Length: 339
Image 1 (cartoon, rainbow, N blue to C red):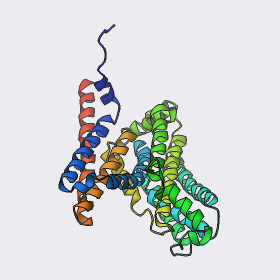
Image 2: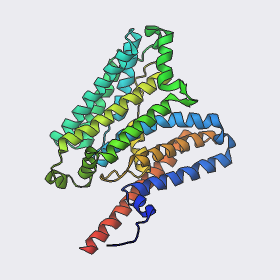
Image 3: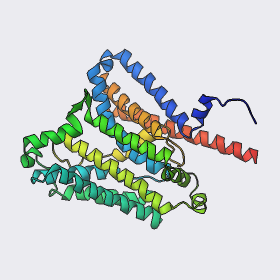
């Protein structure tokens, strides 16, 4: 029996995806400090609070995409589901429907899309890119049609100013103990989905499918059921993002959530979630979403053009994926040599 105690640091680093997460957190500190030295306003409390609130949307959309990416799949319908959620809930509220009912209907619509994605990918064996590309167009079409191909009026016109203010405060403008509710909502959901992914049998099955789907089948993993579950997680988070966007604008916008599916990929990949499947943790997604928002916030603060912001973030995403490929090839190369 080996009497040596295991190194706690090695135990932490042995967690799959932890290396990428820690790298992203280190990068976050460097980026934040650099922007802060260029413009001290970056360190201001008000800016930090706004940064955390804005980051929350990227975190939720990142969680949605990360769950799917870890299975080796992708969900291109995330942004359109967010748009559909915003439009369905806002349209119902402009007609005087109680916000709770409007939220429930929007959630049911998104969950139906999640089930459809799970069936198409997990049961019908369609390539996830094609399946979710199709549902992306369908859900964006619903977002356009639900209010007759136009944005909605202010939700206050239907439910009244007091009720509309309550809805907007809960999802975006309100604070609890001085912290924006948007950030608190995102952190509660982060803790829930982090636990589900890291501490439950379903979470283990998610990683198993992403690592080797055939081996997972032989081990008794219900691939169809697990695939459907990850798409339901994606749909749920997308719905919440749509509600946040609706609360932020106080109305429904047909283009709400546009490109958010790619923001989700960026948040996950920057944080070490592998687009090849089987690797990554939501702690990395948290770091990745923070890196994304800090870059966006910092570049805005120093007056960089939007085009430059997109170029910088695009380069970082490509570099993160390239690093993942290099690391994987190194690991697989060692395994082959050892055989």
